[in-house]
Image 1 (cartoon, rainbow, N blue to C red):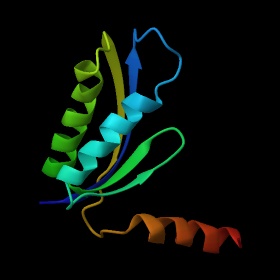
Image 2 (image 1 turned 180 degrees about the vertical axis):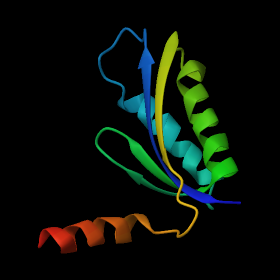
Image 3 (image 1 turned 90 degrees about the vertical axis):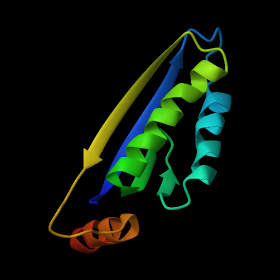
Length: 103
């Protein structure tokens, strides 16, 4: 099964509040059930690293989490990096760019 990187942003809509941190926290708590998926919480998204089927299953559960908290609508954006010739790590991808940029 191929390993992928996925960047996911889940936005609850119709919550009656501009703060969404409690919804984000509920999505992040789901990560405990997927110890085989590595992740990094970013200011605007979460980056996931794992087997394609597991990552997509996790994203589906994350998409459902705001509904369980009463959201009327959820907008989920997903970007997938599926490289089949070589699997990199999140940290190595960043280090390579920093090295090439002289940072």
